[in-house]
Image (cartoon, rainbow over all chains, first blue to last red; front, side, top):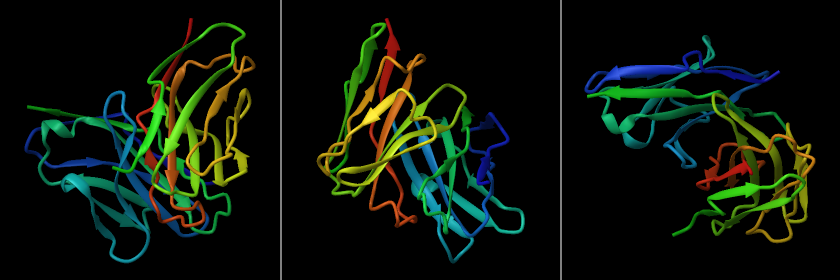
Amino acid sequence: AQSVAQPEDQVNVAEGNPLTVKCTYSVSGNPYLFWYVQYPNRGLQFLLKYITGDNLVKGSYGFEAEFNKSQTSFHLKKPSALVSDSALYFCAVRDYMDSNYQLIWGAGTKLIIKP
Amino acid sequence: DGGITQSPKYLFRKEGQNVTLSCEQNLNHDAMYWYRQDPGQGLRLIYYSQIVNDFQKGDIAEGYSVSREKKESFPLTVTSAQKNPTAFYLCASSEGAERGGKPQHFGDGTRLSIL
């Protein structure tokens, strides 16, 4: 069965420090992987995706993510955190061969950046 | 600007009442989705539609109904059969569900509560 795990409910980082939000996945075939961000009482905003090619993907607002096939991970990273990065982050996966075309979502990780 | 509009932003339901949440998109997307978001949980798929006049149940369709009479519109009705409707409801669209590499675009949600 397809699944996504975000092992940390909350991540606390000091402003200016690097941040990592973890995501691991399980699919039977090749994955499409996505990161989204949600601010309070708002919808989700797309940050970045991995489809194929370079394992390091760059996205919006200075975020990047590294696809690691052997570890089935797709961790979100940013070299220097901003207070405005504080939000809820979701990882999602879709199996390339899945005919249902549905995204499987992680439970979300709350990122808190302290000044 | 293109986007997804959900209305109303807040909605209150009385016991035994059906309520309808509106979702309109002007992105010319074929696929549309309804998700339910509860605190501490990821997004759960209620219904999705890949094309006009066709839709499929998601993981938690019981107590909900949808229609897709126009490409731009995908309203969700929360029926009285849904005994725990209090949640944040998110509508999304994408460029054809079969094109799995395309991200989903989200509206800003409707928060439904029971009176």
